Amino acid sequence: MSNLPSRRQALFGATLSFSALWTTLSLPSVAMAQTTLSWSPKVLTQAQAQVLEVAVDLIIPATDTPGAREAGVARFIDRAMGNFYDPGQVKTMRDGLDRMQADAEAAYGAAFVSLGAGRQTELLTRYDAEATRQPLAHFFALIRHATLLGFFTSETGATKTLRYDPFPGEYRGCVPLKEIGRAWAT
Image (cartoon, rainbow, N blue to C red; front, side, top):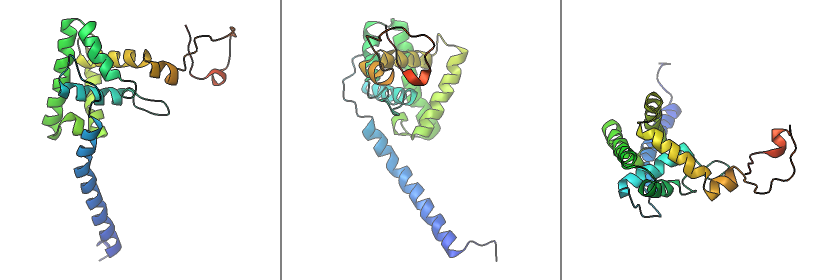
């Protein structure tokens, strides 16, 4: 008899199971609402742009400073693909975004943007491991590089994350980092 759960434990387990089911069923609609674009893609399809928007947000998430989504990095990448990337790189990135969607549907039966952050991160971690083996040819290496470039050259990344100071003042060598913080200058 001691192996059977008490009424309180059974009720707690049922409540926990119901809460998990409710959260799982309601999360996809929340994730979809968060992937509504505030910009119109020029090179990417709407679906590819939404996948990219989620991916850049996972690469540089908002913390005590804004993340890649707030800095408009996905829009930057879309514009860069149309103006600066060579056609081979554009094809690699577009095919990669399509692959992310196909992999999500194959593995979890749902669109990439509607998955929870944990599953999205699992997929990105897998792509990152692949990209370390073939860094110049893998779509994720291109997306990661473009994300970093777009974020740290944006006004948000430069002023709120790096705290850019165009007039840094006099030179003082060997200053403790905690005295300066995150700062850079040209």
